[in-house]
Length: 186
Image (tube, one colour):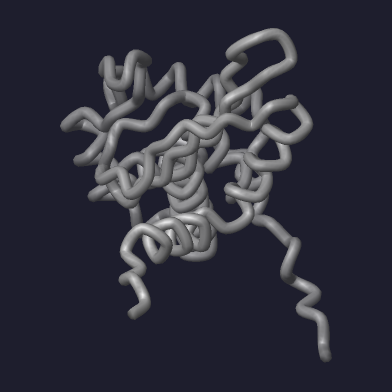
């Protein structure tokens, strides 16, 4: 199989105008408020922009009123202002299509991982000295499919239960529903 030699080659964003456009494009593509960490994660994963340059450009975009912060989910998040929306609408074609594609891929991957991470919860709850319950939750969107607390005993056993649940939570859900809906055999 022939290896793609261009697979790990990134376009170096070092022009402040290109960095501005990339940030505005990312916020426009996401269309929801993004935290500082989310935005920087997606930008750094998609391009080889210098972190300090990225921070400087974010500050300049705020000063120029192209982006602003709003309070969502108990933190400040970035959104486009009207002038930021106008700027990206006028100059989006100046951003390389490979950069746009890479940014889209990075954003999609980040939010897909975030969604799956938020849909599964497994926590250890100490109930006595060296005894634990395992709190399990499986969500699909905003709906909870499974919420339960199970006595696990030792911490080692509780950790093993969490690991098993995280490996295939839908199998656990399916087996539990089969057990609860199984009709009695005649």
